[in-house]
Length: 516
Image 1 (tube, rainbow, N blue to C red):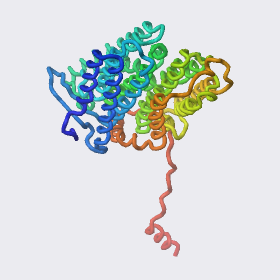
Image 2 (image 1 turned 45 degrees about the vertical axis):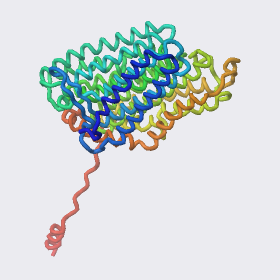
Image 3 (image 1 turned 30 degrees about the horizontal axis):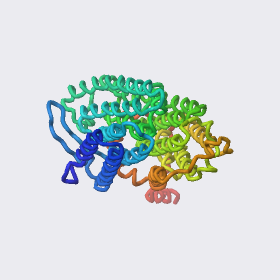
Image 4 (image 1 turned 90 degrees about the vertical axis):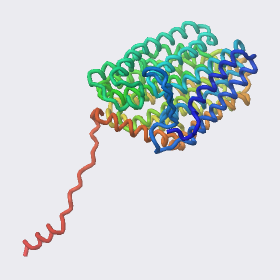
């Protein structure tokens, strides 16, 4: 079903592609302007998508299909989950362009082209309805990110970009083999058809592991998370924002779209693995974050801990857990993107990310301190911010399955509050010691314009989450109905006491009769 008469999803992919090619031939200023205008137009198209989305209507909307060759088709369409992730992408993209406005001075045209190409691929991943099309776009996303880190990154950028590329590529090769087998077995590469196809139980195990190899690296889950801190530290600010904001969500989206609905039995079989790795991740990465000296590294480790909450929520096999996990994904996309922007603001002034070099910023940068505080609180999951809604729902869903894992994850969230508040205290509070820190000016209008929309979105999500939950509710319902047959039994056997039946009038009359 396509509510609008024109192929809006193809337009949303074609427009940045065209702009990316033009950017390669423009001067620095013209390339910046073109990239900004293009990303703002795409955001406007994203708003049109959301406004015309029929909540409670058919599962797949804005469907486009053109058969290309064999089993391969140009098939696009979205459900509520995809739409929210596309919205996240088009919302963060203009902010990334704005963040690079002054800091990127070399090869500006190529830089903007890499970001626009990245946007094409990210929208494509969330909208693809053909499994091979999904794979091509999913993998191609590595290329612009590899270039962004490797060309415009920090001192150790070559090592970080290689590590990022090899880790994510190795995981995905196995996934391709699994996809080829699935298409062979089911006779179609159409994702909506595959979602309802029942693969043999013994095949499911292998297929699940193949997909897990790819999505676990992308999330990233412990122990394959080590590429993330390196990539974040070396990437330019906007690169970190898009990496944390959208690219990590592709792993979660993969679990939602493939692992759970296509292999429900295997998913239930490996719940212990997911829960085990997530528990280690939540505790271990939180403890590692506590001792970090580099701000970006600290936020990168916190991302791994947050993504562990997502994985336990997804594999809770119930509505609360899955809805919570999706909201955590959206919230983390906004909050961690904003935290990396906050680091970028002070990095542009002092050119260091060492926490010990700062202190007392609340005195000479009060606006900055307020924004930084809001996003710190949202990262912790303070009620009223976006982080709370998702984490609360994920833990409710998880408690129904396993109370011990819930306990460990809750401890992880408390540790999360520890390292985030510790970071804030060291950066914003205390005395102004260093002269160069004293001389730092407060946020410019450009920087406020970048952070204010994210702050508004974080508050909106925290105060009125329904507007984000309504589009995904039907799709989560369809997913839960699909995986319900394999849902593991929980250890928290909570049940209501049985009420005693009141005696009927007939029985009471009989009783009276006997007594006479």
